[in-house]
Image 1 (cartoon, helix red, strand yellow):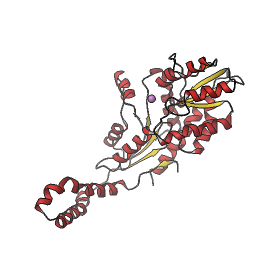
Image 2: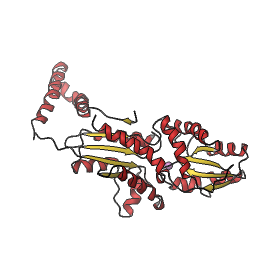
Image 3: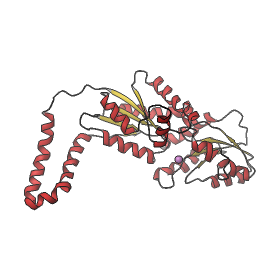
Image 4: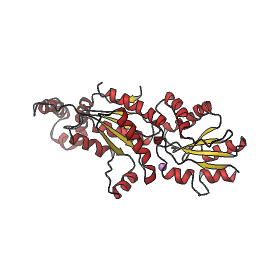
Length: 326
Ligand code: CO
């Protein structure tokens, strides 16, 4: 399955919240009432409350569908057209859809707000959509791995689904690397980011973000397998974790590579691409390559600027939209 759906949350939430009541009220109440009586009372309350809610204002809100696009965001202004490219392609694929945006990075939101532009967190965007009368929202993650940002987004979506007068149904589309099929497609799609000037014998290093602590970061070394199938001089390296910059520069030196193209494997060419990948800092990927006599040729384009890469995310959005009806 290309998607993580959340089923019957209203029912589950009702059960959970009632189950949580005793921990809040038990101590003071248990001094007055014997435990079996108290348990029976709480159980009765759980059974009565949903009925009381149903007896309210009757009519359900009419269904209104929407799409929420969610990216990490960036503080680098010239990186933003890549994100605009996502919206252009989503609108082309879903011309009648109502589309909203949210950013998972607080700093990215802050820099937009500083420029006088709107910038919502996923939580804020979903609350706003509920206020606008949306009932069903397909959330699409424009992250790269199913890492911390994606898990945070899933937790938010789960918490925001089924709230009173809120959104009835929220589904979340997987990020770029949601399966081995995605990894295989991505290895091919990444070729579209390379300039024509790349000569035979030039290596290419795709630089991901990485995360030394998250299990989903296993996706980076897995990508190396698919990249090697596409081109024996394609490599992956990450800012944090494995394969490290040292790993990849050593691998290139062993192959007597003279030139390496550096391409971010991140949705935008933001701070990490400009500094950790292409910057002059002695620890940057470009500097480490130069130290070994390899000429770095940075390509400051994010994956969101490449239509074949965005197509993978769009497949996940299609799955999320389909899941709205299940
Ligand atoms: Co970072």
